[in-house]
Image (cartoon, rainbow, N blue to C red):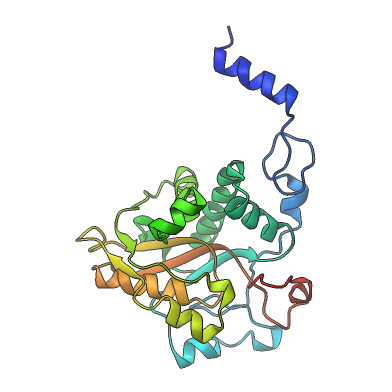
Length: 259
């Protein structure tokens, strides 16, 4: 006999049929296959350190010019795909429209990218990662938004890949201006010393920082600095998306304020 909660869910589905949280088409999946099929994955060639996408003419390079000039504090960053089209809408709908049903499929995307890196010859040594650490929001921002999107993503990813979430190892110690409003130089200054480790929680751990979007890498690098100050060993970064470089055709479809 069906439980009361199952009957209630069936009634709700009848009255309010489930739809894709990105394209709004009817269906049981929060992120439908046609929307997923439109994602532009982050495939090689890219910078081996920060993951910046190279043109084919740059394929023989190992590091991008930014990493050669000033290496970030993390030991490697990867992303699922380009912040454009349906992936961009999925990230924004989850983050700003409170589409909580997207938590599981977006976490699955992160888990799949994690496993792909492990299986790729010459990939980052993520078999050594023993903790997922969400890049924390400041309490004021979390209270305003109502949830911590990086924590939700990390928890959904952990359910797929089996690596535990450590959410109490780092805090954001001061509020910062939204990065989208700032220039590259201002972004680095904006997050300088914005994070701090908590006690000995991260000491001796190899961690994977989880966040939604990687733009200039300023936030990721500063969070990695704080984690290493707290004793973390290797610190890596995984995000759902990052804006396409200016030469990429997808860059011409970007909307103002996307990056």
